[in-house]
Structure formats: structure tokens, C-alpha cells
Length: 159
Image 1 (cartoon, rainbow, N blue to C red):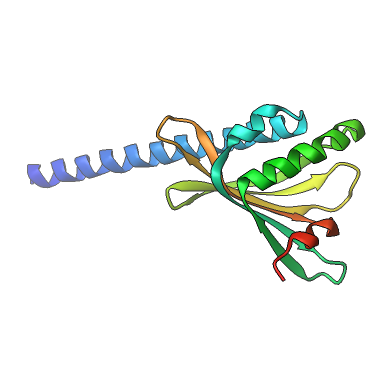
Image 2: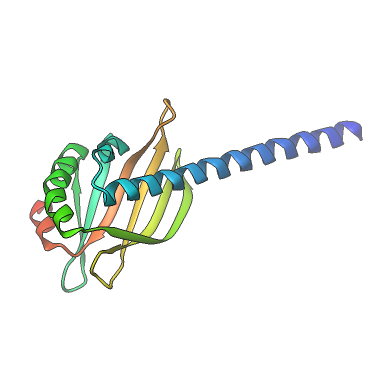
């Protein structure tokens, strides 16, 4: 009987430790997302280091007829495009507001999903990013999907 109780106690301890580690990492993933939002809305150059060099970047264009087109790009191209767009965005004081933020375990990372509302707009767009804690302890975005109504992105779509 003592062995059985010891096993149950040991199992409970492992379970509690695992749940706490999950909760801590999920909270860290959400905090990383919040730091991303802050960096993006303040046009910080640190945002570049928030992306994995081989991140999967998807812009999901919502066409006027409501259909969706995924436009995929690599991190280097995305960072270049971001830098080009930042100057105009900064002049217009463009910012994104995020709501309905959820965090869920996704493989060896976390999926942070939310709704993004561009400044000056009444609509909200779906977005998610997969973030992973790197061996050095830093968090990075390894995948990102953001919906957009900007039709200009369609010129980058694979035909």
C-alpha cells in the first residue's frame, strides 16, 4: 500500500511540475507576443531579431469577393518589405491593436492567435504566430500568418 501511495504522490508531483512548466512557458510566449506588439507599434529595429531566420511568413489576402489567397514569403524578404513600409506607417502613426489573444501549445512552441485591428479601421483580421523558445533562452517567431485587405500583396502570390 505504501508503494502505491508513493507512486501516486510521485506521479502527482510530476504532473504538477509539468503543468506549472506549461503555464510558465505559455505566459512567457504571451509576454513575448506583447513585446512584439510594442516593438511593431513603435517601429523598433529590434523586431528583426524577433523572427527566426527561416520563419514561415504568410499574408492571407482577403479579396473583395471574400475569397482568401495565401501569399508566402521568407524572413529576409519580409523584413525588407517591413522596413520599406515602416517609413510611411510612422508618418501616419499607423498601429495595430490586438484582441482576443489566446495561447495554445503547438509542437515544441506556442501558437498565439488574435484579432488584429489596423488603426483607423473598424474591421478585425485573423492572425497567429508560432513562437519557440530557442536554446539560448530567447523567444522567436517561427511562423506567422496575418490576414490583410491590402491587394498589393497579390502581386507576390504564386500563380
